[in-house]
Length: 227
Image 1: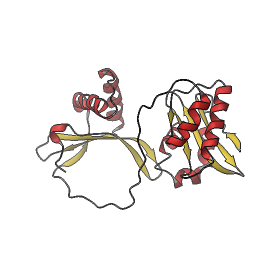
Image 2 (image 1 turned 90 degrees about the vertical axis):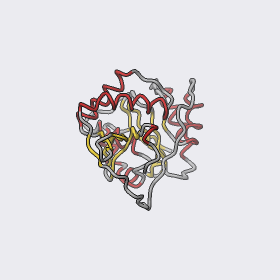
Image 3 (image 1 turned 60 degrees about the horizontal axis):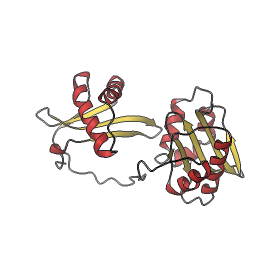
C-alpha cells in the first residue's frame, strides 16, 4: 500500500478523473474542493492524495481547511479502512491538524483512534443516488432567483434551517453574510405561489461535471405538505 501526495489539486483531479466521475455523488466534497483550488499549490492546509495498491486507488483524501478532512473509497473496498489508519498515522506524525472528518462509518472508525484526540459525531447521514425519477405532480407556482430585497427573509429561514436540520445556532450576521454571497452569485432560489408568496428555499453551492450540489433546502412549517 502506497501513499501518493499531489503537488496541486489539479494533479489530484487529473490523476483520479475516472474514480471521481464514476462516484460523483459520493465524492462531491473532495471533487468540489479540488475544483475550487485547482490553481493553487498543495500545502498542509490544502492537501490532496490517495492510497493505492498496484496503481489502483483504495482511498482518496482531501484536507481543505477550514473544512473537515474528507475520505472517499470504492464502495465495498475492504482494504480502505487499513488505508485510513495509515493516513491517520501519517498526518499525526507530520503534525498536520484536522478539524474533523467526513467519511463513511468504517473509515471514521479506522481513522479516528489512530489519529488520536477527542471527537464526537456531529451529523450521521448517507449519500443516496436517484437512478429513476417518478416525477410528482407539480405544485402551482414558479421558481425565481432570490434578490437583495429577500435577504431578511433568507436570513430568518437560514437560521431556522440551522436550528432544525443540524441543531446549531449560528449568529444572524454569519447567516446574512452567507446568503449575501449566494444572492450576489445568483445561486439561491425561491419557490413562489401564484400570489407571489415565497414558500420554499434552495441554494446551489457546488458545481460538478454532471450536476450541482444543493443545500439550504428549507420550507417553513406553515407551508409544508402542499407538494
